[in-house]
Structure formats: C-alpha cells, structure tokens
Image (tube, helix red, strand yellow):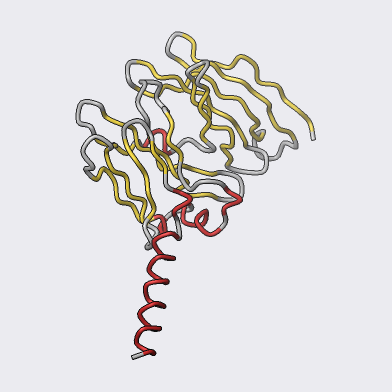
Length: 199
C-alpha cells in the first residue's frame, strides 16, 4: 500500500511538472490567448468565447527550438503586423545561416479567425516599424555577394514592396559587385543608384 501511495504521488508530481513545463510561455493579447501544451503544441483561443483559433505543433518549426532554450525569448509574438488595430500572431518557422522566417497569422475581424499570410511569412528577418507603418525584411540572402533588405507598406490591404537596398554580383568573369537602392516610383521599382565596386 505504501509503495502504491508513493507511486501515485510520483505520477501526480510528473503530471504537474509537465503541465507547468511551458507555463512561462503563456500569453494573452486583447483578442486571443496563447498557451503551449506539454506536447509542444501552440494553442490559440479567442478570449471572448474560448473558441480554438489555432493548434500548431511547434516541433515542426524553429519555434520548437526556443522551447528548450529560453535565451531566444518567447517562441511566438503577439503584435499588430498589418497596422489595423488588431493583434496578430507570428512564430519562428525556418532559419538558415543568414535568413530567418516567421509563420505569420493575421487576425481577420470579420470572421474572427487567425489567417495564415504567405506574403509576410516569406519576409526574411521580419521587422515592424509601427511609427512609419512599414514592414522590413532585413536579411535576404542568396550568396556571399548578394544580400539585401526589402521594405513594404500596406496599400489597399495588400503588402507592396516599396524599397530594396543591397549588394549583387557583377556578370560572370568580372571581379566586382554592385551596391544599389531601388524605390517604387509610379508603380515600378526603379534604381535610385547602382554603383560598381571593384574587389
């Protein structure tokens, strides 16, 4: 009987520990709350009625890495990414040596859902400038010589590229690279400058 009691206490202790395993990552926005269960699922529920909006296994994403190493901070962010006044959600999805991407879900106020946004999820090293209402990808990269940033704005509900700045290689056989800046002018991306640099 005594062994059975000790076994029951051990099981209860382990259950409490597993329930508290990711307790530090619990968060609440104005419209929805986020929790991570003991199987590393990101669970998002609507505050008004408790309806589940999202159930995503973080083990399939880079966010799962953040569960074991808190030096990265929280494995998700609640923020207004499209400047419509509603909380949105993102979490690290994929990263390489240079580029890092977020899985981005925008709150849809008419349907009261979180909808995956592919355009924002394809922005490398996503940054949000609330003051200027700009989205910037600060670490696009395709080679040692080809690196750039992209800046976007929301226009009529769509994400529109308005500026690109970076470096790119010269044609094959030439030992040089270009530094450049492009801006959207009258609906087209045009070079503000494109300077050749010898190596």
